Length: 527
Image (cartoon, rainbow, N blue to C red; front, side):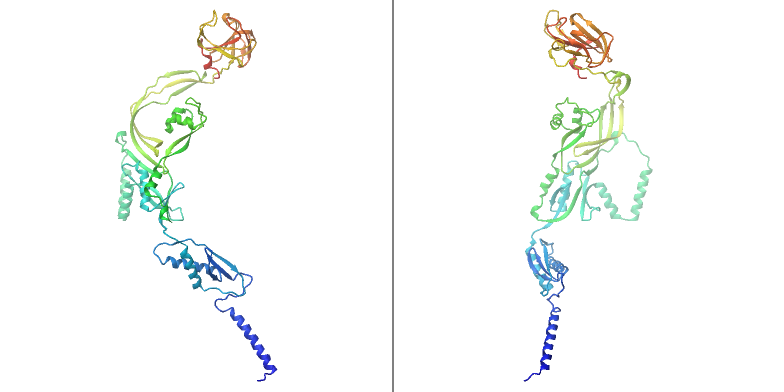
């Protein structure tokens, strides 16, 4: 058959239109993506690195993932835990085939089943100040916590209560203690729950308030445990873990109740002594000394605001309780001090001699574990009253005494000795320091020169009277540099050492007299 030129042109035109229409139609065929540049219009989705198919959007991939997880979870009555990480890689394509939702979901299910974590079970996680214990059930939690209070609650007066923590967004239980009496009362109120019960309770409270208070004698009080609470915050949350990671109840109880050494600090206050602090913190004195480098022995000096480290045994879960206790004891009143501004602080006179009293007392004593924290006396019956000791004490700071020379070697101490030479005393009333003739001698303390010159067995000597009534003497001098009646200050040069009088060699003889009698100078030097 012969085709005309017009027909050929028409056929080509029709073919072109058909190709264009077919090309456009491809974009509307399910399974193909439309060409939208430059945004990503096809996403390859993977779970745990395994490809699960392609989707047209991230949102669609997420919907498929949730549906796949829902399908797996619906196949069992228990929670299924899956370790799954979904990733997706987008691309912008002109042509590409996307998978149906059914295909993607099916592929995801197959991958997720391989990622199921087996044997995870409900567990109760107990957190105590950052310390965590995992137990199998709520009953085990209660059992462990009740074991912690059992040593202080011999009569089983208190129980552990787990209540939702209103301050937490997540479902967390907070543990507290309530008396069994309070728990029973609350249960009774909830059981009746009537308006009449509320009215009866209000009337009962009003009647109790209307009754006059009767003052009880100490022996008439009800004694024993009156309050108890946890000293640490206890939180309980339900989690899912491998059962083999749980802590057995007996092990958890032993860990929570076992006492371990914990460090604490005691700040020294005025009037404290090292032995008194040892009693307060209930730690042997030798242990306090061992734990604090600045303490050398029981005589070490301590000052207000010094910090003393000590160690006390405490469990992981602290229990704070108040016990009402009755006791009888002898006791003393604090010393009453009367001050005199014209006396030195070393001048003390007893005005009234003390005597102890005796009383019967009821006190509320607060303990943290076994350590006493505070005491409040609520009733007292004084059998016989004490008398306070009263003293008169000066307020002026007494003068100090220093060694009268620099250097020197002590050759004779204070007290009995073998007579060193004829005419010398067998009881030495001062201190001798050997030193070359001409060594400077200084006033041990400021005062007034009482004597300056020759003193028989002393040789050349200087006596100085001091404001506190004491006197110092400097003997065997080679030269005197002051005169009687002269006022000198502490550390002022008053003479040169020598070898005059009854002497066995160049030295300085030094005495301190209290009340006219010589005393051992070494007890006063440095004061």
